[in-house]
Length: 200
Ligand SMILES: Nc1ncnc2c1ncn2[C@@H]1O[C@H](COP(=O)(O)OP(=O)(O)OP(=O)(O)O)[C@@H](O)[C@H]1O
Image (cartoon, rainbow, N blue to C red; front, side, top):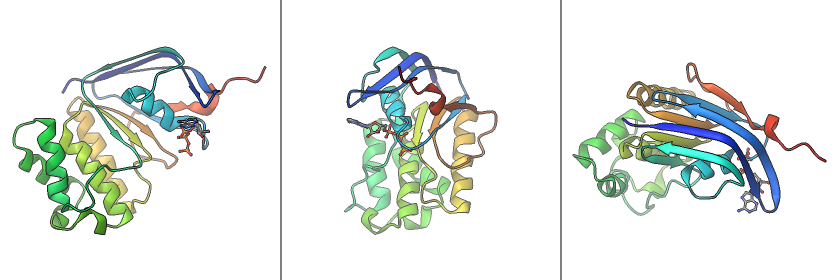
């Protein structure tokens, strides 16, 4: 799996306000970083910059490999059955054997018995795990996970941590914005609060 991420002196401006500046980070194969900081300091905004959905105000961002963003919305069709909704995206990803990829991803998040259930009927935590299954099945090298543990029970948090560990062992890279402590061994930590601009 090919993946790397390098941020150099990145600054972000939203709504006319500088959120953070001077953010640098380098992650190679198997690397991980946990982004922390109070509400509104720009964690989600940083992930969106890396995903290419917005432009940084300053600095450079370089990404190698495909990127998957786990955000608030799962983008899974609520009317489709879970396995079918995942299959839709897995086919678009163009990787070999999409049904097997989906089955493996569902097993990884312990939703393998719910593949026939329409997405809209899933519970909050199950929907979050379904979104993670989509990331797992997609095979992207760089995972951008925005509050992936929100709504998850203890067992599901362990599954999330295992999925991250497996992804890194395969050479993947993970950038996680989280308020909750997660067991991600050897992860770098990035406290965005420390990068808030100093008032003039
Ligand atoms: N499109 C936008 N236009 C203007 N301001 C925005 C936009 N998107 C986000 N913001 C502002 O940028 C700031 C940072 O938001 P962001 O969602 O990145 O914070 P966060 O650190 O992820 O917060 P939380 O911990 O609450 O998830 C907030 O004040 C938000 O209102």
